[in-house]
Image 1 (cartoon, rainbow, N blue to C red):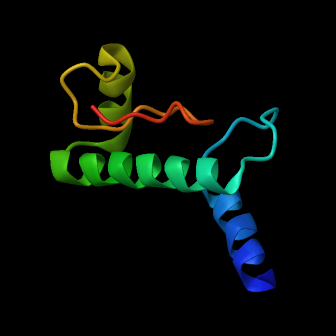
Image 2 (cartoon, rainbow, N blue to C red):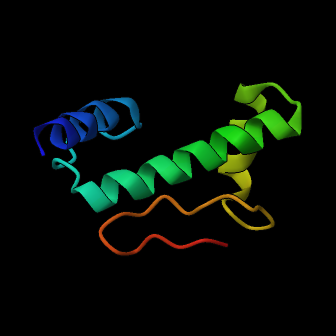
Length: 79
């Protein structure tokens, strides 16, 4: 159990969060990691510059995208 908890702590340190957010639960950590991996995959598949992709993503939001919505605490949805 100790190794699982330390693995979650390491994963929490690798997914992007805001500094003021509370410590993520294990399920929230997994959901956020899934969404983050999906976003990175979409960036690679697009073949565009990551900054340009993210700027366009932020303008459009999630409309017309296969990306995951970045919510936690049971509000994680897939488009």
